[in-house]
Image (cartoon, rainbow, N blue to C red):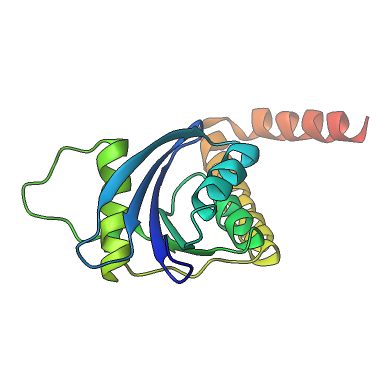
Amino acid sequence: MEEDSELFVGLDTSTLKISVAVADGERNGEVRFFGDISAEPASVASMAAKLAKRGAKLHFCYQSGPTGYELYRQIIELGHCCEVVAPSLIPKRPGDRVKTNRRDAVSLARLHRAGELTAVWVPDETHEAIRDLVRAREVANDGLRKSATAPSVLPSEAWSNLCRSLALDAGA
C-alpha cells in the first residue's frame, strides 16, 4: 500500500466486543469486515497497530452510545483520526431493518469514506464529569420530589414521628 493511502475504519461498539470493518480509500475500493475484537484498550491498540502497518492513514468512526468516549480518546492518543457519530444522523435505506454488528460496522466504514456521516461534539473529561454531576443531581432531585409526595397519605402524627426517627438516625 502507498504511504499516502487512507483506510476508513468503522467500529460497531458494545461493552464486551467491537466489530471492525475497513474501507479502502479509493472511491470504489473494497469494504471488508476485519473481525471482532475485545473492547479492552490493549485489543484496540493492537488492531490499530495491525492496520497502521500497511502504511495507510487511519480514519476511525463509531456510533455514540453507552460505551462513552474512552475509545475516542484512546484512538486520538494513538495518533489516528476518529469521529463519533450520532445514531440518529446515520443515513439508512428504507426497508433496511436487519441490524447486525457486522453490517453496522461495514456500513459505517462505507459511509465514513463517502463523507456522509455527521460527527458529534466529544466532551473532554472535565465536561463529561460535569455532565455526570448534573445528571446525578437531577436523579437526586427526582427522588426527593417523589419521596416528598409519597408520604402525604400518612397521618400528620405518623409523618412527624417518621421525620423525627430519621433525624435521630442521621445524627447517630
